[in-house]
Every structure is written in structure tokens, then in C-alpha cells.
Image 1: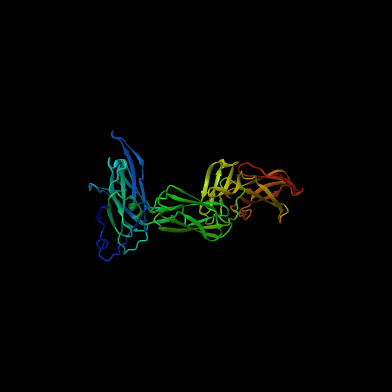
Image 2 (image 1 turned 135 degrees about the vertical axis):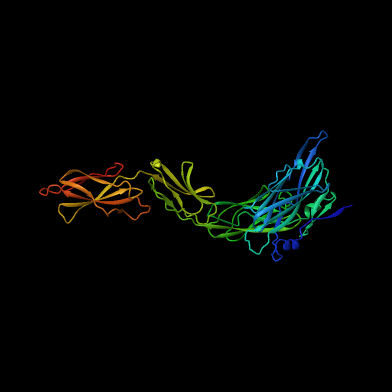
Length: 466
């Protein structure tokens, strides 16, 4: 006969906790916990000499929690159903039998255990997981949030089934002890059944391949589903899908449509007929062509807007060969070459899903030599002005001088107050300096040849003035 003995769990009294948490006026928040599995089973084979080997192992459980919490504390109470012995662990406990860790970015708790440390005989363990913390969206009137859930560990040695703990359906916080005659009964009753996409919204360029992972809770995809979950586009352009299971998750791949937004629906059916569904969207964005300078100069910062928009899988990079010197997934890309980079070629790339979508070369060159732009007569017939354009990352550096090559001229003088940018381009790398030159012999024509030099010794072309 089927033998059932009710084992009522030592669940917290939520009402009493809410009043004991403070002055009796605080609103108690309950943490909802959703174990991926309610039973973890490991099969072990042992011969008469004593050595054991694991035939089948289910050693990890992932428990989702809601809402998001700060200052989290997690505790697991593990009870040997047969002997009543209890082991308590938390995330700091070092134990060869079981361990806990919190992955707050994913909103999950990870529980793992070692069946070989459990026993040399078939065993059943009841795990009670207790969580406390402060809601991330905390209100001053809230008490600490608390929550609790349970699942079962079993070791099956030489095919001898231990007594089984099963969870009753609904929100009954009681486990029942069942004789091992009906194992399927334990597997079919249980727990929340949910599926959830890793990415709610996929934003990508047209024609690009994307992938999404669908987590499945309350069922083992390898044995507890009626088949592969169904996938269809419920609105927007149609998409051809590839789907397969990988490490207990459903992987869905497709290509982004030419335009618009498609909403994808995923429906999974458990072997007991219970269904769970979820949706995510695939949005197409049109990428504009970024403006990338062809030439860069030492000490001058290059700023490029890669126009990534809201594409999740996009990033921009400037690299030299395989070495990345600057990268961004959001905002402008900045790069300042050094003097040692002169003569090198850097590559700007915009990547979507890791594949280059736009590429442009940036050549790092030395600053050009100065240029004599103009020689102009002034109101004084014995004086002329010379306009020189020079190049530098800073207008106070690499400033030019003017030398007389030959002719009827003397006394070259730099005029103060004329230093300015040569054009409106940004960043500014060229500047204007103005000089004055005087006739040497007023009785002779004011003819001469001149040349400009910067501080690095680079010279302009020789300019003749008649």
C-alpha cells in the first residue's frame, strides 16, 4: 500500500515575523522563490569491496527570486529524512557536501551538492532554503523581506530507491513522505513551471544573426517536456528560426528582418499538460555611417561618434593589428596617438554581434611643415606682412620663424596679437602667425626671398617677392 506520512515544515509565521520585524507597523515583504528543480537525483553504483562510482548526477539547482534585494542573506537547512540529522550552510560555509552562492546580477541563488559525500546507502534529504534582504526599491516603512522554499536531494545506491519527498501542488508549504512504489507520482506533482528569455528586446541591424536563450524552470528539458517548445512570430515580419537545447536552456537563433519590430512567442508544454509561454521582440535599426578622420596627428585626440544607437550587440573599436587601443559600447570613441605612433595605421571598426559592419583606416602622420600663405604690402611702402600657417596640437607649441634667404630685406619681426586658428575644423591642428619685414635699402626695389621654419626644423617652400 502507498504509505504517506505528513511532514509539516517548520515554516515561519509570516504574521508574527511582520510584527517582530519592527514596531508592529511595518509591512512585511515576502520574497518569492522559484527553484528550477524540486528533486535532484544521483544514481551511484557500489560493489562489495566498497568503491563507488556515479552513474547519473544532478548536482546543481538554480533558484530565482523576486523582488531584487540588497544586503541578501541565504541559508540552507539540509535534513536527512531517515535520521533527522540537520546541516545548516550559508554562502560563506566551506563544506564538502553542499555550497551556496548568490548571483545578484542574474537574480538567482545557486545550490550545489556532492552525492558521494552523502552516504553509502540510498538517502533522501530535504533542503529548506531561507532568504532575507532589503528590497532594492526600498521604502522606509518596509521591514526586511523574507522568503522560503524547499526541494529534495536523493541518492540511489544500486537501484535501491529511498523514501521520496514530494511537493504538493499549489502554494502548500508542506512536503509529504511517500513510499518509493510510484516514482512518477513524485515527478509529476510540483512546483512552478516557467520559461523566461535572457533578452526581452533584441535590437540589431538588418540581416544580422542573433541568439536568445530561454531558461526553463520546473522541468528538465531532457525528460519533462512534450517536445521542443513552439516558436512563432505573433506580429511583424516573419523570421526563420533555429532552436535546440543546450545546458537545460532553449537556444533560439534567427536573422533580423529588413525593417520594423517582430514579436516572438515561445510556448513550452510539460508532460503533465501544463503550459508556459513568454515573448521577446526583435527590432531592426538602420545604422548611419560614422565620420572617421582619415588622418590623425600625435598629441591630438580623435573623437568618433560610432552611431551605435540602441543596438545591444554592437560596439566600436580602434585597433592596431590585433591590439585594441580604445573601445566603447556606448557613446563616443576617443583615441590620442603618441609621437611613437607616427607612421602607423590604426583601424576603426564598428561591430555587430562580433562581426565588422563598418571599417575605416586612420593614418597617424607627422605634422606638415609650415606654409607661407601670403606676403602683403602695408600702408608703409618699406614694410610688408607675411602670413604663415603652422601645425601643432597646441597653438603655443611648434611656432614658426621666418628667415630671409636673400634680397633687399631685413629685420623680420613677429607681430603680437595675430595668433589664431587657421580654420574652423575640430580638433584644431593648424594655426596662423603673422610677421613683418622691412626694406633694407629704400633706393632699391623691395624684392626678396624668404622661408618659414617650425621648432622641429621643418621648412616651408622658398617664396620670392618682387
